[in-house]
Length: 281
Image (cartoon, rainbow, N blue to C red; front, side, top):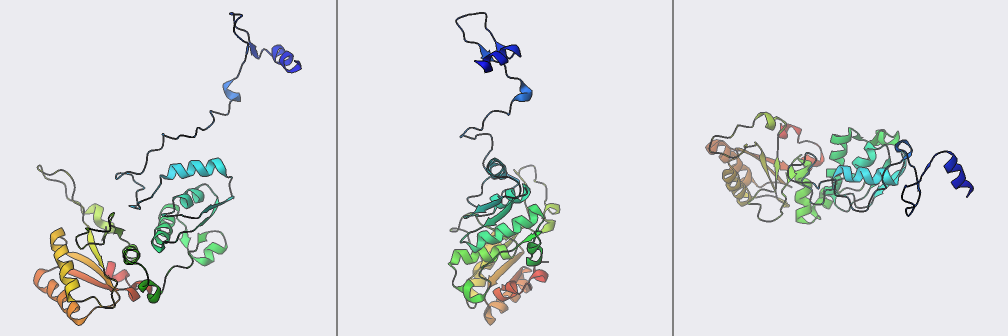
């Protein structure tokens, strides 16, 4: 009753003219803290094919969704743990919101996608010296040996190779028509021709990637990739394997000489030793 009397003295109680209605407390906007968050969120759209943040990762979540969750459940400098980090959306959100973070995933592909995204979006480097002083990050326990890469499941090996080349993996793992991934070069956006009057859209320039988890890719493997390149009307492509037979290398030379199409044969060892920059140029 003392509280009611005090509120009445302060003019904070509204008395309706209709005496059958109950008095109510007056609330002012500058005293309100907003509407409590509901449990159903429909204002954040899912990742679609046109989303700027889309990576092609099958379970990618919208960045605003993870930013809202982290904002609501932690404070600056808290530690965010994502035990199934996938393509790293929660880690990017945590980094942007000044949280510390730890990400875990069983897939080497996920870890490489996550690492590249943190560098591209957040501008932090993958370097142990920087990580120790809180300005970088490190990725542990990836299969950085030929022996461990040979033991990966085929699709996982394909993912690793495509991402290591800086490419994008196909959405589907079957029916890829001989192309496991695509590289969109830096200059691609400056090399897009406008559609003609009878066409519907733009034609992007890209390079196909074929991956074979073999000790030595042979002539038949190269023949199939050549067919895929012709079908896609691509004059340049990248092939990844542990090594190549003499017949395969001869066919690559013939393809260039006779059809003016370039296949760049790349070995796993070259990728592991960071010796592929000149091939990607």
